[in-house]
Structure formats: structure tokens, C-alpha cells
Image (tube, rainbow over all chains, first blue to last red; front, side, top):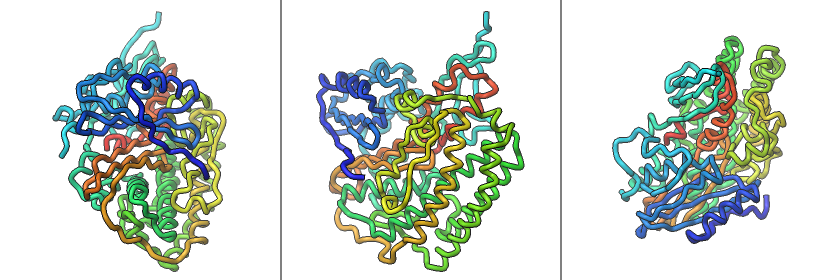
Length: 116
Length: 359
């Protein structure tokens, strides 16, 4: 297949929510959410797919900077957002089904937050 | 007024081979809400990528799950190869494709057996698993392992199949196609199976897309999306179209898996006929520096492998989004409004793999 998009699009916090709503209106499906620990905080990737095209919205946030849940727009995001909050300590607010760090039965709090 | 009660379902249940727990909120016998709990066996395998050499990590990726082992290794290797700008030799790509399709047949036959067992159709369960044994024997003969086998490496594959092995595999697959047809006919036309599956858990196309459904669950709702169409491995050389159904119910999900099994057997034969000679791997120089999202079609649906390298031998991040993670949300939607007695069957029709989800 030719000309299949698989792009990573950097985005600011102000642009984030309107873009997610736009994606929903254009019937993109949410395919994954991923957090990566970086020096200044977290690098968050929200990937959407339409047919075989994939666009990843890339957001950089501080460690204590809260981010709104997208479950109001994509209800299916709740598992991956809970995972991000629980493993990395990303402060995700207003998840429709918030497990409050009880999604996984693990001993350590936010085990992926520190490197190594 | 209907009586409201909460029934805990799982984590141990005869229909669930792996632990998932649901709190089912019922009004009389009708489910009005389902609240899932997972995390009983979370292993944190993604984190290990920071401590292991990126080449060693293939072995860990292959051990995320038994049924999807080959696919996890392949997805990880392809992602790293994209970052490093290398391409596995053509023969290696064909071998990967053959093992992937054998894994799909294995997975679908396993699921069909579990479905028959859940329906109380024991002879059909045994027939499906008898056939599955032949695939496991061929895994054993070609890789040395029946369930988890290490064949992928960054840059190619570790094992080859000689001509006699390929001929034996082709003969086995031909025989399996012949033996699978009456099993498929029974699943598709038996009255009791139809009465349990038809009209159960209907997911329409639009809802399937927006709720994030993937794999046979999405295709059973009429959306022809199959990541093999992206052409990784040898798929761009093989005649292949996504298999769909339009009804979106449990029967449609069964129908899609049955037809995919037949198609996978045909794809194995076609790949054997066209496999080129050549090297098994290319030498690897340096370390990955960059990032890539790789998508492949696992038996249960689209899986995403994200790797991020920083030029050292340890990757900065590996993320695996498994098909079941995506299929849990649409499953919860389907459970609303169904009868308590149908819950085990409905959960089974998404073919959940908790081992993958708890990577």
C-alpha cells in the first residue's frame, strides 16, 4: 500500500483538546496512548487511526502539570489513561472510570516514573 | 420494580483461561453495567527494556504471551529495524510470515475449541483442538518449541526451514484444510450454535470504530481493516483481502475467525510456494536512535509496538498496545443489556488475552 501516513505531530496543551474533538468528528479511532519519561516531565503520545493512516499527537508536560482526560470524547481511553497515571504518575484528571491507582495490583507506586 | 444486585464475575471462571474480574450490575437477570478489574498478574515487562540490550529484549517480547509469542517478537523487531533503517532479507520475511500465519491458525483453533466447550459441544471442542495439535507439532518440528519459540531477531530470523521441511509443512497444511472444512461447516450451520450466537452482542460498524474495537471484532462489524494490508513481512507479495461480516454479532465474530483460519492455511501454502532463497539475517551495526510506531495484525487484532532509542544499547521506551486492551471497552458496551447467562459467551467472543494485556 502506498502513501500510508504514520506521522508524529507535536502539539501544545492549548491545541490538544480541540484537536482531539476534531479527530472524533472526523471519525478517527483512538488506537493507543503512551507516556515516556523525559528530563522535563512526560512525553505523551495519543495515536489515532483512520483506515490505515495513523497520526500521533505528541504533547510534552511537566511532572506535576495536570492533563485532562479525553474519556469525555473517547470513552475507550479509560484503561490506557489509568495505566499512564498508575505506572508513570501522569496527573490525568477526570477519567470517566478512575481506578485511583488500583488498576494494577502492584506493590510500588508509579514504578515507571524513575529511569532504571 | 426490578431488583438490583451486583454479581462478581471472575477472576476465576470456567470460561476464562486467564484472570479478569467484572462487577456485573444486574436488574433482575439483565446486565445494566459492567466494571472491569485487571492487574492480577501485571509483570512490568516494558520496563525491562531499560536494562536489557535491545537485541536481548526480543526474547522478553516473545514471552509476553504464549499464543501471540511470534507476533510480539516480530512486531518488536520490525519496529527496531525501522528505527535503524535496516530491512530483513526476503527469505527471513517469508519465514516470519509463515510462522505468523501458523500462529493465527493456532490461536483461532484454540478459540474455536474454547467456544465449543463453553457451548457444551465437547466433541467439536476436541475436534478443534485435535487439529490444533498438528500446528503445534509443526511449530516443534520447525522451531524446537511448541508454544513459545524464539525465531525472530533484529535484522532477520534465527532459524531456517529446508526444502524437505517446507514440503512436509505444505502437506500438513493441505491435509488440515481438508479436515478443517467439516469443523467450519458445523460451527456455521449447527442449529444449537446458531441459536446461542446469532443476535448476541451486536456491535454496529460505527460503534465498533469509535469504541476502538480491533481485529476480528472490528471486521465482524463490517469494517475491512487488517494491518496485514500494510504489507510488512511477505504480505505485500501474497494474495490477501480482509475478511469481514456485516451482522456484528457473536456469530459474525465466529464466522470471521473460521474464514481467517482457512485463509491463513492458504497463505502458508502460497508463502511456501514463493519463498526465495537467501540469507536469514543482515548484520546489525550501531544502536537504535529514534522512534517508531509499528503496527501488525496479531490473531486477536491490531497490535502497536512503539520503540524509542537514544543511541545506546538500551532502548528508552518500549510500549506494546495489545488487541485486548482495545477490545475491553467495546466489550463493556456489549455487556450492557445482555442476560447474565450470556455473559461468559459474550466475553469469550472478543477472545481476550489477559497475559498480553498484563505485559
